[in-house]
Figure 1 (spheres, rainbow, N blue to C red):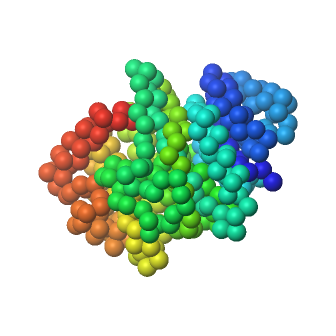
Figure 2: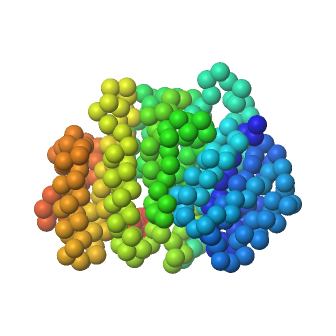
Length: 340
């Protein structure tokens, strides 16, 4: 059995996928790399096949009709042979020194009767437009370099949450969560890092700057223009997350986990609100109203928490004042993090 599976969804990635794959290969024979060619029309498939021929014990290739990023991740989960599972996008890469530390941790703990369910690491925004970078760490909220449970976590900052790039799941945890991401939908990475959380019991925060998140290409899904254009997909993902768990039940088992999951949902709702407002289109203002109505009717406890409690959520205030505060907050955070 392999210790880890890296799944790399690839769509027309020929110009940059080599860098990604070369960093993953440094994990050695304990790793497998699944390259999912998602209906590419360039040389992506040929490059993937070349790596599989060169490294037959490490690299496998799945060629599929275009199904989107989520379907690439789904195929990786279905076919994974590794004890742990990590998604690495084809335009990103891993720091090899940090990857060495991750592999050492997995080798050390893999035989434990109580294995780690979720390993968290830092990630780095690599900004293409000005060649700068910004590291996102969790030292303020997670115990460092030791096993812990949800009861041991601190309070996440307003804009702080666990994204896919930080997460390495035990594969069995993902399968127990019955995770299946929707096809042809952007932003499903949020579902990936949210839905399995109640199945996570033992966590480890490895304080290493491992994932390098390349940001700044005009065709990326997180550009402001694309976020507005694909707002219906953002709304869909937010609804999938809200439907995934009854957070009142989660709270009965772990108040801190429920608090964090409410927090994450509040950020997703704020993102929907921001881009619906920024579009300036009347139909999107109606969608904003409809989204809150849907939440109230389907998840009244979550609705009340989002609207009327401020201890762990982004502002999300109703009315014009609320919209102005949300927009100000978004522009301030965007200036600091340059996330699109």
